[in-house]
Length: 448
Image 1 (cartoon, rainbow, N blue to C red):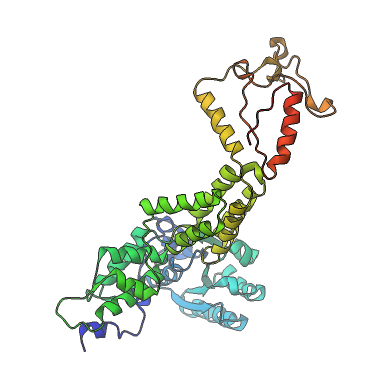
Image 2: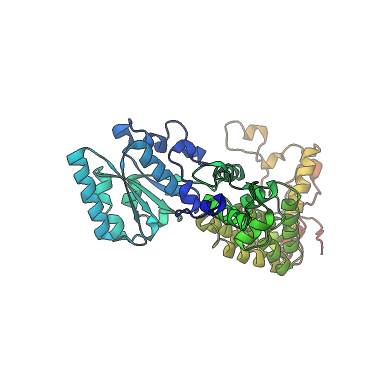
């Protein structure tokens, strides 16, 4: 048997073999692993009662929830019990609690209960956890990919620390890949990898360590197939593409392609082409672009390009961003697509965007003068003696709610910034705006 053949005959998958044995080996989540943090204290075998706090780990798949739980158990010397909310029931939970109580009372050994996918537990099943957590029979480490505020009962939330895990950075994923290639638990130097293939693995993994290592193992197997030479085989981009059964997009999240695709995405929305916009959205999603970045760009587009022509565009874009934050990918692609199609097909106006930029340009150029005296604050002592507020007319006293008086400083008295367009909901706004201009004694100067 060749070394390559032996390498891939291992029973456990590469992500399992490479699971860290201590917190020092964990890649990513540095914000949770600072000295003195809850997880570091929990992993300290000498922490005693200081480390009795239960925790709920909330984050996307492949960010290290199970890894952290197992590393803490190994480092702390505690008994480790793992349950999956998919298969475990109330009876299983109660048996674990009783055994943990027995181990504590008879042998002085504390138990870590790792409960994966706690959001799948019913209220009754979560209720069964409360006595053990509250009385310290177990230290619960629960993992969930869904917002615990909606999926975990309030009594359990109040008795636990909620810790949020982040997708792994490109550097974190690169570190994991390099370690798996060299480590005896992993590929043990039996294969090498090109820089392009390594970058492709990082790109396609989208912050998911498990996905990166699974793809690496499959690509290594392809590269080693039929190779019996003395030199280790090399993983190429083609091997990575075959392993994950998808095309490798030429997309550098820090380079030109990143800016070119997002530019084309926004310009397609502005140009009212939903098909082109969806194409560029799909390219970004498949290339591993941060969905929160896409959502932020949709919010900007709703404000800049749609504006007052459709006042519902901005709330819908914000709702899509909140949905992506709550559910992540792959489901997050649906609200992103919904917002993209809506923005692309609705009426467009940049009047508010142009107006604020023109106003800012005047201020920066020094065109701002004193506030007219009748608009100044007259509520403090001595203000009226200075003439503040004198002659101000209260619009609500008028039947139409608008009165003719000067609002801009003298230097800008006849300046117009806002010029509504006759598109979408802004068409009705334009009619109101023209009436207001006439009451104020100005000449309407709108654009088509």
